[in-house]
Image 1: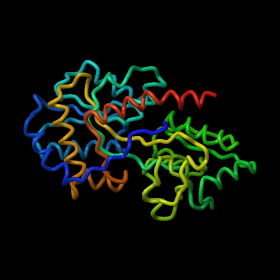
Image 2: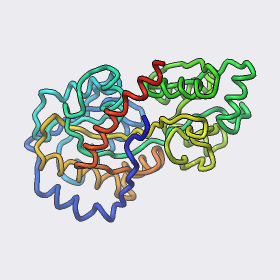
Image 3: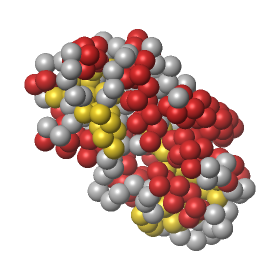
Image 4: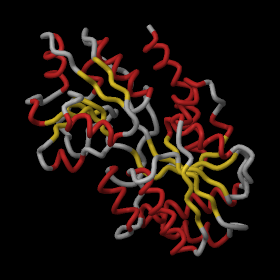
Length: 315
């Protein structure tokens, strides 16, 4: 992606009064089914369940989490189709679902759902064990040019394409290994089955401990934990991965329901001291709140620009 969702971190103090107003103007007509497009027990699943827990505690709304995984979030999107548009069914996915994944699979268009709000971005970086001795992605490229088979772990099709283009732009051929989830990449690195891999924030603790090194930022801006790490653009790569977690509802969702749910989620994730806020801050670098027209435009832009990445990887 040339530019995915642009980070817009919103302080809790800004959201406080508006969220209360939105939430008090609308009440769900029944329990809210929260579809989660991620495997149980992972970071994204934990984030969603903490948000559900705090919404129940603050607003008294009954929120029922339900796993619908597979196809990069597209199964969750399909589960929204035909669901009531009254706010009683929402899904937590990532922006990549409505961008690259939907475009690559030719599985519809972003307006098949109603984007509600983002919650957090990802600290997407290329990671390796510190014991490898590499300091930057440039060291990895030099090792590949020297004949070393570099096994590159990725967890999505989009990241696979970016890894391929990174190698192509620098005259090397990475051995790209596709797995399911960032935890699998971390496990592969620790087990020695991979040399480098993408981490979306799960690597933070290992980086802080000195066990792993972030060799490059796959974002358009530096990584929080490794601000001196180079950007992919420093290696001639024009695509970045600025994935955001987001909630969506069925198409043509009731605007009052959309706004109230967006406000309630924003309130939960930005309130310091809350479980969701602490988890998002520690694991994903802090809340990223984008909603309304800005979010709809960003999602559509991601979808429209996905074709460039798919075409470049096919060359």
